[in-house]
Length: 288
Image 1 (cartoon, rainbow, N blue to C red):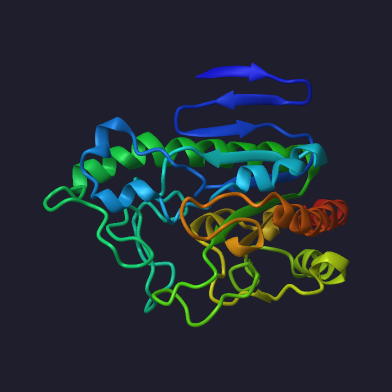
Image 2 (image 1 turned 60 degrees about the vertical axis):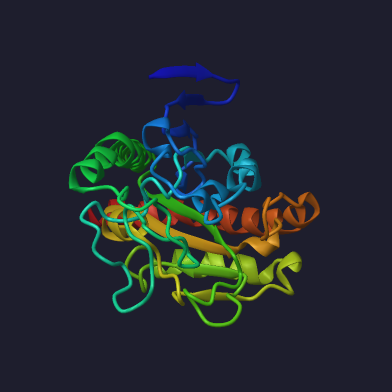
């Protein structure tokens, strides 16, 4: 693994993800940013996979401001079509009874088959992908959470996601603009979550935005696995409509004017969390 330094923090260059250390108790995870279909698996895919339509496009650019807030940032390079870093390695459904995609998905969000006939990954290939792509991401994510928790007493894991605003196979109608998930309150202190959502509601730029807490998207595996308020680790997933900052149709271009309007809202949410975390650190220390 090669490591390069910039003026503010070390950045680790890994083949399957990027990682930048921060100084504040905030870790932003972007597990569905990746667009790589590695050479060893590329020939297995049907042509539709090359469009990468279900990517959480441009979130590294949208959240670039967070580095100035002192956040650590980890982001996938490999496509979720290869392996979904936000699914459990055992591949049980996170939303039983609802349509969703698995650890090594066989279909797009719209139900299109991703693999050529007879080329879907078998058990051995799935195990290889877990070892090659899934475990390194989670190892770094967990290690950084432990570091930030030890240094600051409390830490927020912010799971950054985006999705097309209309996907009839997954949900009815148009999705709310901002979908906050805390695993029905289990992954994050209620007061911290309220401060984050309150900061969004109070921001002038959010006046026209709709939001929901623990609606269709309550948080995926990462939120549920690592969010542990009793241990000082708080996790919030934000699934936002891509229409807020980009074109939802191919080639999925970034729309800078739209992005500039929503970035202050995201910044207000993260800053509210950073103001609240010292209180939670003191609270946790008192109970320890």
